[in-house]
Length: 340
Image (cartoon, rainbow, N blue to C red; front, side, top):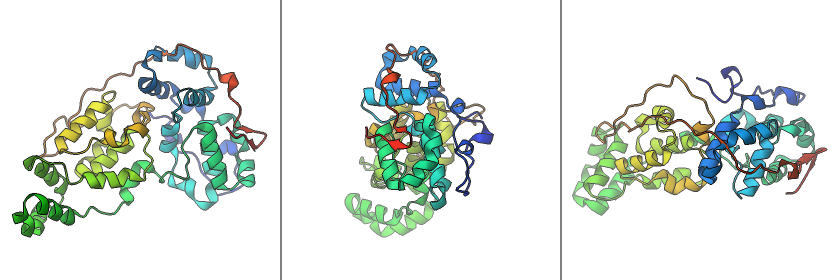
C-alpha cells in the first residue's frame, strides 16, 4: 500500500533527546500528495477550478504549504493540510519531552520553510502560547485542542450502556418489554447495535444510539471522512469497524451518498449532518491506496454488512487564477511570531 510517505517514513522519526536536530524530525514535502489534497479542497470549495490544479501546482512547486495558506484565507476556511497533520501526529508527539517533535511536525506540514526555527521557538514560547499563535496564523488546527489520535478517539470513550438505553427505549415505546431487557441483551450479546437498528425500524422511530454518537463526536475535532466513519461504526456497527478504511475507499468520491445510505440502514443520524461542516476529504483523498482488501457489498440489519460502491477516480486539473503567494507574510521570521 502506498501512502503519503513510504512505509519506512510513514511516521516521523522521534527522539526524546532535546538536542535532536530539526532535520531529523522534519516531514519531507516530496512525500505529500498535494494534488489529491488540492483536488479534494476544490471539489468542496470551488469545483470549477479543478481543471487547473496541475498548472497551479507547477507554478507553485516548492511553495505548496504557502498555497494552502493563501487558499484558506481566500475562501475563509480552515487549512486543507489539517487532515494531513491529524494523520501524522501520534501520542508520542504529546509526551512532555517531545515539544520539539510536535512543533517540528506542525511546521513541516503548515510552513516547512521555517521548520529550522522549531528549536528556538520551543525555547522562547510555552506550548499553549506558541500553538495558539501558529494555528491562528496558518488557519490550522491547534494540536493542543484536539484529542490525541482523533481518528481513534472513540477507543478511549466509556462503554455503551446498552441496558440503560434499551430500558429507556422500551419505557417510551413498549413498557411490556422492560422486564425482558436483561434477557434480550444476553441473547444478543455482541450484536446490540444491530438490535437498536431493528427496533428503530420496528417502532418507526430514530435509533436510540444517536445520543451516543453525538456524545462521542461532541468534543472531538474531526477533519476527515475516515475518522468520522470509524466513530460512526463504533456506535452503530462495531463489528464492521475493521473494514472502515476499505469501505471508504470503495466509496471514494461518493462519501455523501455512503453516509446517507448508512443512516438509512441504521435508522440513525447522518454523520455528515452532525459533523459535515468540519469534515474535509483528507482522510483518504491524500493517500494513494493499492491492493486494498475487498469490503462486503451488501447491507442488511440481520448480518450487518455495509454497502459499497466502485472506487471513482479523482478528477485532476487546476485553478483559474494563480494564487498570489508573494503576498503571504512568513508567520515565522527570525524566530519571531507574526500576528495575522
